[in-house]
Image (cartoon, rainbow, N blue to C red; front, side, top):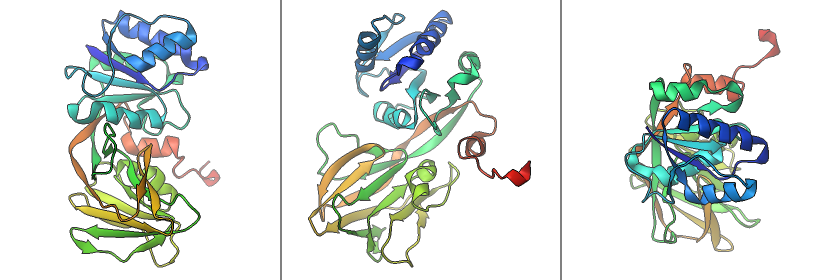
Length: 293
């Protein structure tokens, strides 16, 4: 079994645990392929070596025959995994070395049971929708895909006028601090924090949620996921910010962005019996109330 290993960083408190996991994978016969930039940083910072393996540096040289892509960290690391896996249909499993870890598949305090389950094939694969953003303004090499959301935000004290078309039909402008366009996966992230609804993954919908709207009769809007959404913004200082998950660039006003569902899905590896509902209860403490005890 070929297993790709990716992290942005592994903090010192997790280093020993991380090495132990790699040794266990190797002992079970895994062919490990490391993200080379991370491998070099980790070995240098910890003055150590890792079990033998090969390397990849980007989505192009990530082997197509990889069976599992493991990312170690929190949700930010999981989101960055999309930029490496993209359309390759490799199951992505997140091992929580971070804080909340809503997207991660397994937590390190739970022991090594999940390792055995990988080799037994005892896991589920959930197909998660991905957003694709079209524009000529992105710099070379910038990943145009997002798993959680695409957001437009002000970068100065003045509100934005966000103009949206859905399948060619114009909505009234959003006078606000910005707008979040979310997938069902992202409905528990930025969209939720600005008042958007929670959507169960698999729902064929996208969510438009304004950020601090300046007119109180504006509410989040749910649209079909096969819609073609066009967005541009106007700003007093002529600039704004677009973010695709955790990657951002400055944009000039009136630059047009076309957002659609991508032609591929992220294959999310899950060990949970309760799935998404279990994650809501565990990570977001869904329904927690002292009256229930």
